[in-house]
Amino acid sequence: MRMPTLLMTFARIEEQGLEAWLAGLRAELVSKTYRPDPVRRVMIPKANGGEPP
Image (cartoon, rainbow, N blue to C red; front, side, top):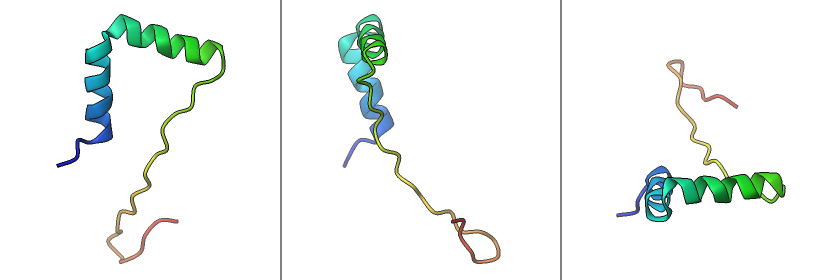
C-alpha cells in the first residue's frame, strides 16, 4: 500500500525534526529554489452529471 503524499511529508518532518525542516524550507525560499510538489487534480462529479473544467 502506498503512503499518501501528505503522510510522507509528515514522516519526513518527523525524521528531520521540525526545526531542521523549517530551516531547510526557509533556505529554499530565501534562495528562490523552492519548488512545490505538483498537485494531483481530481474531478468531482456534480449532481447534474457534469464535472468542473
